[in-house]
Amino acid sequence: MIDHSTSHTQKEIKEIVKMIRLSLYNKGLHCGPKAIKTEMEEQEINPLPSESSIGRILSHHGLTHGRTGFYD
Image 1 (spheres, rainbow, N blue to C red):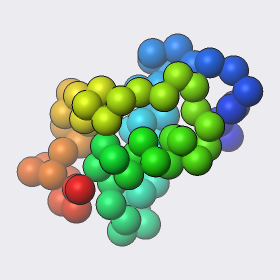
Image 2 (image 1 turned 180 degrees about the vertical axis):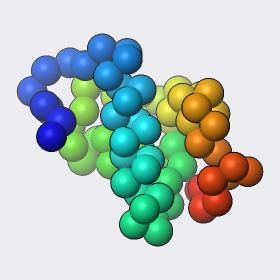
Image 3 (image 1 turned 120 degrees about the horizontal axis):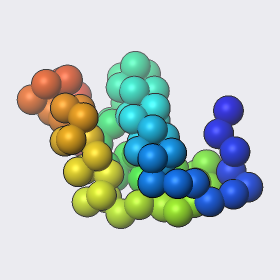
Image 4 (image 1 turned 90 degrees about the vertical axis):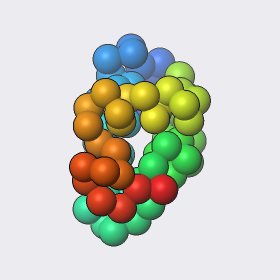
């Protein structure tokens, strides 16, 4: 369970991005930066990274369209 009441470290944010991406992907939903940011907003994650930052996190960890399929 993600603790929404406090600000998260950069390392925690990276892990949250990867967890949300995996969750969306496993549900067959859009799992790109915009979808991940929307999910993070709904979960009130702080600090909220930009879509470009989320995209860099995904790219750095090889979680982009060319390697994992459905990505938008």
